Image 1 (cartoon, rainbow, N blue to C red):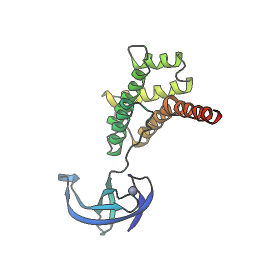
Image 2: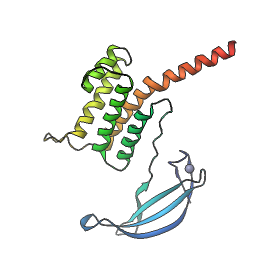
Image 3: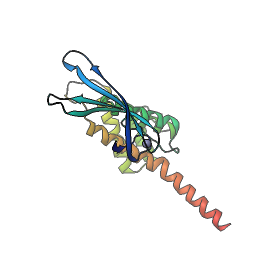
Image 4: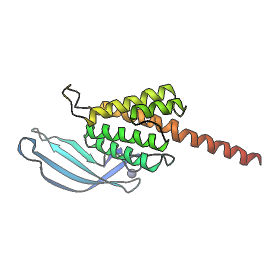
Length: 202
Ligand SMILES: [Zn+2]
């Protein structure tokens, strides 16, 4: 039994392993000898699959776990926005970083549609949101970062920037989550806090 962070309940809890199967994964030079193990979280009953690989010395090391994380989005974020966010995080979790950056950019476009941003390009729409004070100058900069990294993911080029790293994608994700906070989550919290105060007064 080993303690680890559960992607289902987000708690560090004990897991027990219930069955394991060894076999091949992939072919040619990329072929691996893996052991797949189903594991049960003692806190929430969630299951995960852990794949371990054996090296020449016979030591097992974890290769991949499914799911490694389950993206969660606050319910105040509109469904179309959160759906693209979840797709992007899922892409990142399996190492598809270009696809992730492209989906984060698409998620940003969903925010523009949700806020009826004017302009034919994402660049113009971001400017419009700043002009209408829906986002601040800082947030405008973050939005442009998401847009530009998303372009790297979406368009093949010969400038060597085609490959994105997990760290770069994490930064894009962070910018987007801060936009969620500012545009959707915090305004909803303020409204709820005000309503709560009004109820206490009356
Ligand atoms: Zn759990």
